[in-house]
Amino acid sequence: MPLQNSYVYTQTIIDSDKLLTNTKNTFRYVSQRPYQSKKNPEETGVSVTLLVLYDSTDYGTDKKTGMPRESNVFNSFDVTILNKKSYLDLKKGDTVSLAGFIPEKSFAIGFDLLLRFREIKKVQTDEK
Image (cartoon, rainbow, N blue to C red; front, side, top):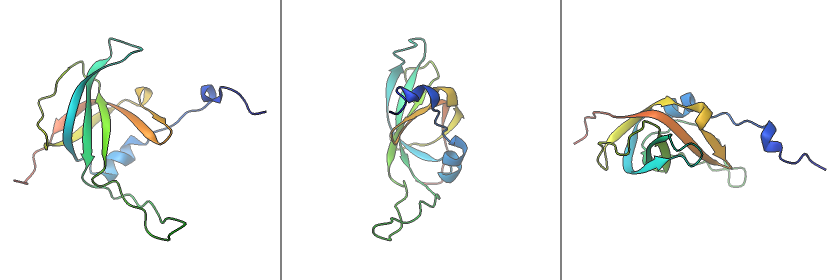
């Protein structure tokens, strides 16, 4: 019989440096909503939805089809900014970058990443 409640003994490590490097730490801001932790109500901030603009990761090939696996370009994901603010001065379509990854508050459930950062910054671009 396998061990029960084995989650107590496991740890998932999120390589935030690799994520930010391979995506050039450049994302398109989509939306935001206030965040407050259910376990620790003093942990507040903003959950944001971001769109991936770049992804240089080599995901290999699909074993069944032999075709290259798709990158995350144009996929969206959520990130929580734990900055004790309930609103960010960002507009839909702004280009942003993330800073201050918080590994002890970030985790994975299945293939979903729950990422926590301290800061999100608007990036100036040449696009018009």
